Structure formats: C-alpha cells, structure tokens
Length: 575
Ligand code: FES
Ligand code: MG
Image (cartoon, rainbow, N blue to C red; front, top):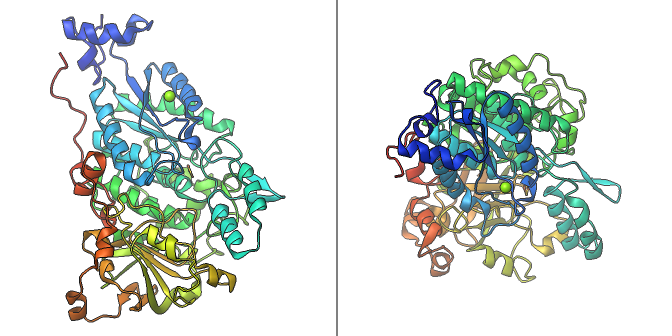
C-alpha cells in the first residue's frame, strides 16, 4: 500500500487505500518491492526499438542502461514500446506515419501512470515524433539518440549510407559501374547497428535536438557501437529522475532561443532539409512562434563548418572523432542564444568552452568555412506563394540562378514511366517539375524531390539539373532541388497548373521562384485531369484523417488538431 509522502503525478494512480489505487498497484507489482509505490518517480522509456526499424534495433540495449540509471536514482523504469518507423521500409513514406506515431505516443504517455519519459529514437522520423509527443504532454522528458552506425567500406572506400546508394545507382545508369558490382556493395552499406552515418535526417535530428537542449550535451553523434552511448544512457536515467524532482518540463526551458540554436546548428552542420518540417512541427506543439522564414533569416549567415556527406566528404564517426557538435557550436557561439537552457538546467553555451576541434579536415574553424553562408534558403514567388526551400550547400553553384523550360510530371509513376524515354524532350537546361508529392497529394510528402536525371543526359555527363517538387528530399541526397513547394499542388497551389514548356526562373540569391506567366494567365489555367488523378483520395483510416487535416510543409505538416499541448492531465478514472 502506498504511503502519501512524495507526490508525483503517478501518485494519482497509486496513492490511497481505495479499490482503484489497489487495482493500479496490484497489476503493476510484478515482483516490485512495496516501496516502488511510495510516491517515487515512475519513468516511461518510450522505446522505438523494432526489428522493422533496423537503425533502432539496438535501443533495447540502450534502454537497459537508462533503466539502471533510473533505479539507481530512486525511480521506477517502465518500458513503453511505441510506434517505430523504419525509413527505408514503410510505405508509402515514413512521413505519412510521423504524426500518427506522435499522436499515439502522446496519448500513451498521458494515459499512463508516469511522471516523466526518456525518449529513445534514431531513424529519421523517430526522434521528431517522440519530441512532438513529449512537447504536447509536457512531462519532464530527455532524449537518448541511438547514434550513427560505423562506416562500412566497399573496395577500400568508405560508404556513406544513403548518399552512396544514390551515387552508385546513378553510376549504373550512366554505364560507369556494372550492376554486379553495384549489388556487391549492398552488404557493406549498413555495417553495424545505428542509423545512417551521413549528415542525413537521423544525424541531423539527433544533433539539432541536442542544440535544442533535449539531450545531455555532448552525447549526440556518439556512434551506436561506442560504449559512451551506454554510459550517457545510464546518466540520462539518473537525470530524468532529477528532472522530475525539479519539475523541469519541456515548456519550462524550450524557448524561441532554443530553436534559434537548433537552426544555427542545422546550418553549421549542413543538416537535412527535413529538419525544417520537424522543427516547425515541434515548435507548433510548444506554441513557440517559429516560421519558415526564420530558417533563412537565422540560418543563412551561418558558415558551413562540417565536411560530411552528402554536401561534403566525411561520415558521422569522423565527425564524432573530430570533436562533434559542441566543437562546431563553439565556433559560432556568438550566434547562439546564451540563455537557452538544456535538460541539465544549464545553458547550452556553458558546454562549449571545453570543446575542441581535433581534425580540421572534418570540422572547420570559423575563419575557413566550407561555405561562408550556409543554411537553407526560403524561396517565394508566384510558383510558391507559401514558400519553398533549397539547400544551397547541396546544389550546383552555377544552377543557383537559372532560367529554363519546364518538363512536368504529374506523379512519381508518370516520372518513372517517362524520365528515361529517349523521346522525352529535355535538355540540361530544362527544369524538371514533379507534383502531387506534398502531404495531401501523395499522401505523406515522400522523399522524391531529387528525381533521377534523364538517362540520355546522364550519358552526356550531366550530373545536376534544377528540379522542383512539393515533396521532400532525403537528407542524404544532393542536387539543385527546390522542395516543399507550398501550397502543394493537391492543396490548390500553382504548381498544379504548370505546363511542359513554361519558363521558370530560379534565383536563389534573390530568393525567387517564378513561373513566367502573367497573373491573368495563371488565373485562367486549371489543373488537367491527369494532374487531378495523381492526387490521393483516401476513403478511410489514418490516410483519410491525415489528408483531411494535414497542414502545409510551411508550418511543419502536422495535423491541424494536433498543434499545441493538452498537458498531462487525464480527468477520469478507468473504473
Ligand atoms: Fe534509418 Fe537512414 S534509414 S536513419
Ligand atoms: Mg521491445
């Protein structure tokens, strides 16, 4: 029987002598000592370990270290398996399920007798969905990122997962690599537990989440196979108990300044464009005003300091060896909000003074950046009234200002059917347009914006072209790709009425994306039937709920009714 001593949220379930508290305790005793219910913190470990999310399959081991720390600090750890999304596996795209994962995790955190939560994620959508959930419940929470895998090698050369799949498959299409050799590389691509080792979405989200303040500073980027991951997991277990005792909730320390720090980090590391939609969605859960334009205004003057694939050369274990995130942030300390706090209660900037860069090839000092102004450019114009983004660091400099004629595809299937057709009228100067790939249109906003180049152009040596799409791009991809065009075609955006042969001008320095049509011409056009046929029209289930309620990429592609917080209160008892 519980004593009414220390009082936490879980005491609403466990304290008392009535029938209901008896029921809650009895079913949870499972051999636990009686004082497990004396008011000590009960901590859920929201665990995205899954065999179908290979990047997270080691998180059960991580959880054991977290549990040890929680026990040691006087709490009770509880495994809470939550929806997990394997980026390379789930169809039609993991992004369709991010909000579902966030919603289900939010509700399970709230519904259960817990006082705080440790969030275990890794693969692309898992940390964002956990963060969105935790923000909306607003119980004390800390993230443990699963960390990147070690680098695999093929024929003596390091393989960047994701990035080198695109590169090698294009080499096959160009005829410079045999299919046999290509398939041989498959077994080397994923060489250990952990998430993708490029500066893709998983690495990016783990690093920006540390910059936000939600991870023990210095942990993000630790390779999955490194013992220091387990050490920090153990310490996170102790820390969450401390957070609960101090009632330190995400809303009490995540501020606009925290997001400023995340955006500076995103630019300095050359992170994935997917971080834009995820950070906007997380901010939306916290009620923190953050806009698409903030990514440009805060991020654009930030130097690119990290030489990692896909923009550069190295991989995540190199990054960790070279000093990691804190050594990068030390270089741009003046751009950070000095007041933004971390889970430890101390400001992020307090952790920077001891950080050092150990390898200048991987992490540059401020004076010699890889690119002086990195970040993400936000484009506007009559083709993207709500905004679109491009990552200049991953683009070809000569294409950043380009005028060309559109070659339009109505769907990903249409693109695949025609892109390699020798009869396709396309030149290196054409602008490839792909629509119907936004949140509503696909549905789920897949990573297809970096569409393959036409085979006949590849054979001529063309390696990049301007591409425009309302979908996303893999964080491991590269090219002069305009993505997240808003409003998307399926939501009535002008992208739906572009025709093959229209002139389009991309002007990144001026932040413009313009379709060469007068306003009258624009107004008089309507989407053709093939375009409309390309849009998803789900009848039931999650897809129906999603398409009816998903917002644009410019606000994070969350569901309209999931924005904001419901807090941790549950008003009614279960019996
Ligand atoms: Fe999981 Fe890349 S597929 S992180
Ligand atoms: Mg499990």
